[in-house]
Length: 183
Image (cartoon, rainbow, N blue to C red; front, side, top):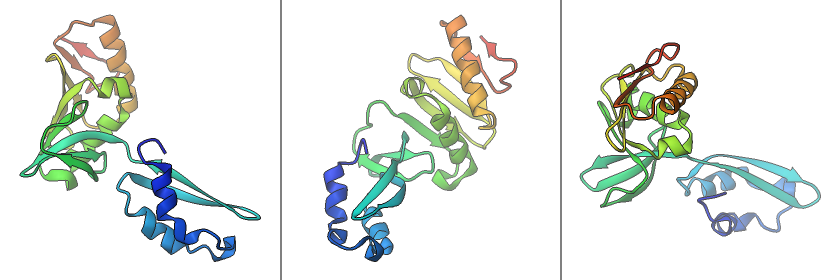
Protein backbone atom coordinates (compact mmCIF):
# COMPACT_ATOMS: atom_id res chain seq x y z
CA UNK A 1 0.00 0.00 0.00
CA UNK A 2 1.07 3.60 -0.42
CA UNK A 3 -1.75 5.74 1.01
CA UNK A 4 -3.08 3.09 3.40
CA UNK A 5 -1.00 2.24 6.44
CA UNK A 6 -0.14 -1.47 6.42
CA UNK A 7 -0.51 -1.50 10.21
CA UNK A 8 -4.14 -0.32 9.88
CA UNK A 9 -4.89 -3.11 7.42
CA UNK A 10 -3.18 -5.67 9.66
CA UNK A 11 -5.21 -4.43 12.63
CA UNK A 12 -8.46 -4.72 10.66
CA UNK A 13 -7.57 -8.30 9.73
CA UNK A 14 -6.33 -9.28 13.20
CA UNK A 15 -9.36 -11.57 13.70
CA UNK A 16 -7.85 -13.92 11.14
CA UNK A 17 -4.48 -14.23 12.90
CA UNK A 18 -3.72 -17.68 14.21
CA UNK A 19 -6.33 -19.42 12.06
CA UNK A 20 -5.27 -22.28 9.80
CA UNK A 21 -5.27 -21.11 6.18
CA UNK A 22 -8.19 -23.37 5.31
CA UNK A 23 -10.30 -21.68 8.00
CA UNK A 24 -9.59 -18.06 7.04
CA UNK A 25 -12.98 -16.37 6.62
CA UNK A 26 -12.90 -14.67 3.19
CA UNK A 27 -16.19 -12.91 4.03
CA UNK A 28 -14.70 -11.43 7.20
CA UNK A 29 -11.67 -10.25 5.21
CA UNK A 30 -13.98 -8.61 2.66
CA UNK A 31 -15.98 -6.90 5.40
CA UNK A 32 -12.83 -5.64 7.11
CA UNK A 33 -11.34 -4.26 3.88
CA UNK A 34 -14.65 -2.61 2.91
CA UNK A 35 -14.06 -0.11 5.73
CA UNK A 36 -11.16 1.35 3.72
CA UNK A 37 -12.49 3.52 0.87
CA UNK A 38 -9.04 3.53 -0.75
CA UNK A 39 -9.17 -0.23 -1.44
CA UNK A 40 -10.21 -0.71 -5.07
CA UNK A 41 -9.50 -4.42 -5.27
CA UNK A 42 -7.70 -7.04 -3.25
CA UNK A 43 -6.54 -10.63 -3.64
CA UNK A 44 -5.84 -13.22 -1.00
CA UNK A 45 -2.88 -15.55 -1.52
CA UNK A 46 -2.32 -18.55 0.71
CA UNK A 47 1.34 -19.46 1.15
CA UNK A 48 1.42 -22.72 3.10
CA UNK A 49 2.09 -23.62 5.76
CA UNK A 50 0.90 -20.47 7.56
CA UNK A 51 1.16 -17.24 5.53
CA UNK A 52 -1.74 -15.30 4.09
CA UNK A 53 -0.79 -12.43 1.78
CA UNK A 54 -3.33 -9.71 1.04
CA UNK A 55 -2.50 -7.83 -2.18
CA UNK A 56 -4.29 -4.49 -2.32
CA UNK A 57 -4.79 -2.20 -5.29
CA UNK A 58 -5.56 1.30 -4.05
CA UNK A 59 -7.94 3.67 -5.77
CA UNK A 60 -6.33 6.46 -7.77
CA UNK A 61 -7.69 9.87 -6.80
CA UNK A 62 -8.29 11.85 -9.98
CA UNK A 63 -10.08 15.01 -8.90
CA UNK A 64 -12.51 16.78 -6.62
CA UNK A 65 -16.21 17.48 -6.81
CA UNK A 66 -18.08 20.13 -4.86
CA UNK A 67 -21.06 19.76 -2.59
CA UNK A 68 -22.79 21.72 0.14
CA UNK A 69 -20.22 20.31 2.56
CA UNK A 70 -17.15 21.43 0.60
CA UNK A 71 -14.86 19.36 -1.61
CA UNK A 72 -14.70 15.60 -2.02
CA UNK A 73 -11.73 13.80 -3.56
CA UNK A 74 -12.97 11.05 -5.89
CA UNK A 75 -11.55 8.33 -8.08
CA UNK A 76 -12.48 7.74 -11.72
CA UNK A 77 -15.54 5.72 -10.66
CA UNK A 78 -16.82 8.55 -8.46
CA UNK A 79 -16.01 6.82 -5.18
CA UNK A 80 -15.50 9.37 -2.38
CA UNK A 81 -12.04 9.07 -0.86
CA UNK A 82 -11.91 12.09 1.47
CA UNK A 83 -13.66 15.40 2.11
CA UNK A 84 -12.62 18.85 3.28
CA UNK A 85 -13.97 22.37 3.48
CA UNK A 86 -11.11 23.72 1.38
CA UNK A 87 -10.19 22.55 -2.09
CA UNK A 88 -7.26 20.13 -1.82
CA UNK A 89 -4.23 21.15 -3.83
CA UNK A 90 -3.14 19.04 -6.78
CA UNK A 91 -6.58 17.79 -7.85
CA UNK A 92 -8.66 18.89 -10.82
CA UNK A 93 -12.10 20.28 -10.12
CA UNK A 94 -14.54 18.02 -11.97
CA UNK A 95 -17.59 19.91 -13.23
CA UNK A 96 -19.96 17.65 -15.13
CA UNK A 97 -23.67 17.39 -15.83
CA UNK A 98 -25.58 14.72 -13.93
CA UNK A 99 -23.29 13.89 -11.00
CA UNK A 100 -20.96 10.95 -10.49
CA UNK A 101 -23.37 8.41 -12.03
CA UNK A 102 -23.61 10.27 -15.34
CA UNK A 103 -21.86 9.27 -18.58
CA UNK A 104 -20.16 12.70 -18.55
CA UNK A 105 -18.52 11.91 -15.20
CA UNK A 106 -17.39 8.46 -16.33
CA UNK A 107 -15.81 10.04 -19.42
CA UNK A 108 -14.08 12.76 -17.38
CA UNK A 109 -12.82 10.16 -14.89
CA UNK A 110 -11.49 7.95 -17.68
CA UNK A 111 -9.66 10.90 -19.22
CA UNK A 112 -8.08 11.94 -15.91
CA UNK A 113 -7.05 8.37 -15.14
CA UNK A 114 -5.39 8.07 -18.57
CA UNK A 115 -3.13 11.04 -17.90
CA UNK A 116 0.29 10.45 -16.37
CA UNK A 117 0.51 11.80 -12.80
CA UNK A 118 2.67 14.79 -13.75
CA UNK A 119 0.21 15.93 -16.43
CA UNK A 120 -2.84 15.16 -14.28
CA UNK A 121 -1.36 17.42 -11.57
CA UNK A 122 -1.35 20.31 -14.07
CA UNK A 123 -5.10 20.01 -14.77
CA UNK A 124 -7.02 22.71 -12.89
CA UNK A 125 -10.51 21.69 -13.98
CA UNK A 126 -12.42 19.27 -16.17
CA UNK A 127 -15.81 20.01 -17.72
CA UNK A 128 -18.26 17.86 -19.64
CA UNK A 129 -21.96 18.04 -20.40
CA UNK A 130 -22.00 14.72 -22.27
CA UNK A 131 -19.62 11.79 -22.62
CA UNK A 132 -18.35 13.30 -25.88
CA UNK A 133 -17.32 16.84 -24.90
CA UNK A 134 -14.65 16.55 -22.20
CA UNK A 135 -12.44 19.62 -21.87
CA UNK A 136 -9.48 20.22 -19.59
CA UNK A 137 -8.33 23.57 -18.24
CA UNK A 138 -4.65 23.48 -17.27
CA UNK A 139 -3.09 25.67 -14.61
CA UNK A 140 -2.04 28.84 -16.39
CA UNK A 141 -5.12 28.93 -18.60
CA UNK A 142 -4.31 26.49 -21.40
CA UNK A 143 -7.40 24.68 -22.70
CA UNK A 144 -7.39 21.08 -23.95
CA UNK A 145 -10.31 19.90 -26.08
CA UNK A 146 -10.46 16.14 -25.47
CA UNK A 147 -13.82 15.08 -26.85
CA UNK A 148 -14.88 11.58 -25.81
CA UNK A 149 -12.84 9.30 -23.58
CA UNK A 150 -12.35 6.94 -26.54
CA UNK A 151 -8.70 6.47 -27.50
CA UNK A 152 -7.53 8.31 -24.36
CA UNK A 153 -4.13 6.61 -24.40
CA UNK A 154 -3.45 7.88 -27.93
CA UNK A 155 -4.88 11.31 -27.08
CA UNK A 156 -2.49 11.51 -24.13
CA UNK A 157 0.50 10.76 -26.37
CA UNK A 158 -0.71 13.30 -28.94
CA UNK A 159 -1.16 15.95 -26.24
CA UNK A 160 2.29 15.31 -24.83
CA UNK A 161 3.85 15.55 -28.29
CA UNK A 162 1.99 18.80 -29.05
CA UNK A 163 2.96 20.31 -25.69
CA UNK A 164 6.60 19.41 -26.30
CA UNK A 165 6.65 20.76 -29.86
CA UNK A 166 4.51 23.85 -29.18
CA UNK A 167 4.76 24.56 -25.42
CA UNK A 168 3.23 28.05 -25.29
CA UNK A 169 -0.13 27.41 -26.93
CA UNK A 170 -3.46 28.54 -25.45
CA UNK A 171 -5.34 25.61 -26.98
CA UNK A 172 -4.63 21.96 -27.74
CA UNK A 173 -7.30 19.91 -29.49
CA UNK A 174 -6.76 16.16 -29.34
CA UNK A 175 -10.38 15.17 -29.96
CA UNK A 176 -9.15 13.58 -33.18
CA UNK A 177 -5.81 12.21 -31.93
CA UNK A 178 -4.45 11.40 -35.38
CA UNK A 179 -4.56 15.11 -36.24
CA UNK A 180 -3.83 17.21 -33.15
CA UNK A 181 -4.55 20.95 -33.46
CA UNK A 182 -2.98 23.88 -31.60
CA UNK A 183 -4.12 27.45 -31.34
